Image (tube, rainbow over all chains, first blue to last red; front, side, top):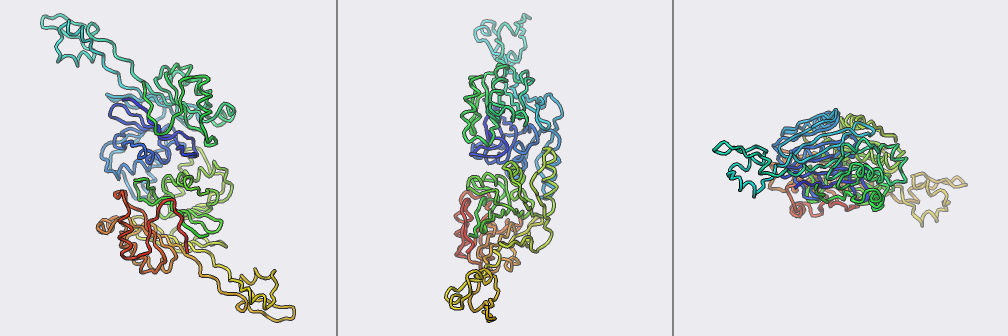
Length: 301
Length: 301
């Protein structure tokens, strides 16, 4: 399971039961939270997202609609009895805010809370199960997009070939890792002879808040799933540029140029009661586009 | 109209679709916000509370479940085009947090935002329409309760007597304010002769978070409506005391001793899925008790 559950798809002003940005990435038994707008923890309750599975939180930038829900979430985790490590990644400034909020409440977080400051592109986390890296986007304040990929899938055992070569079953795990097998007589059965290549790693790319920027294409290239903001419809292209946001057509253009499998659009302006026009416009450029509907889990496949 | 609309009735951990503390007081055409837990602005949308009518916000204390929604609300007021003054009252520390959150976003609030620090009991605001004063409560950090009263209602014109005395209609407003009337011939029609006494000022008392404290009785005395927290049922009296919170029976005892008209209880622990037992317990001591149900407006009468 590698999926993205949308908790909020609106821009700064909550409207029409749309909430500020938050997404939960599920990779196998791990959850990753990307951005944490106000009421994210309430959305988690609504959509049955288990807070206890979240060990990594990535905040793209410190505009309120992307992090105002964080302090409530981390204090609630304490009330829920959390004891395990939590890692927070964000551009500079987050720790100072959280520390001040804890200080006025005469409170502290008893579980291990680690702040990691993002100051440049690169790998943020690599575990046996997934890898998260970041890249800067062009916005009004320092802002980063994220690439989440499953860690390299194992090579696949070719049943017929492995039986023919008489490799013992107990060695299959080694074969999956890419090792060759040496028989008792010293013959080397090369890995490639008895296994098939692993499936390519699945990749989800989240481009956060951004102005239209073809520089994002390289980061989104060949993503299985791309999230790109589409705050405005095409007729607001000028306003989008002024506010360092993007339009439907621009989001779809990035998806098309990057040859992704599927595009999700979100971060809708509260000026739009209906967002059906957004998806219709985007599909004129990139057909496999969907609205990042709240409560829906999109598979990365 | 003098009413209290409940936006949140839960304690720190949002649960069972109950939200952290927030209440909107409507007095004539003005609105006052008391406390502002996370997602208060979303609750406002849900229950059609107009943000533009709020000119005064009172934060009882700086535990997160009473103010984490404030930064989102005041930034949204900006996005909604607010230009009028907003007054915030809280114990020390709030301004520093808000300022830091604005600074990292490279943002400012363009409408006049006034921070008022509460450091002792006394009158906070008095307008022609209402008066708000505060008193300290016993909690883990500095915390204040609030008394909101309608400003003194005008004297009532006695129609029969005013006509008999031949006071001209154009002078009725002066009579309501308490002035006497002098006829053209120099005769003084005393105010008391042609008017009836004003109704007593209606009073709402909000005791915030507090341990059981009979010292609150004097502040709640004769209130038309009293809100008192009842975080726990009676069997958790010991835990309530340890955490500086109160039980159902304790809330009802304060209401009874203060001879209030009606009691609202709230700030329920998230350990309780149902809160029906709370109201049943409280009513054994004070019959006119109700749960501060979210979305309900309770009249102060």
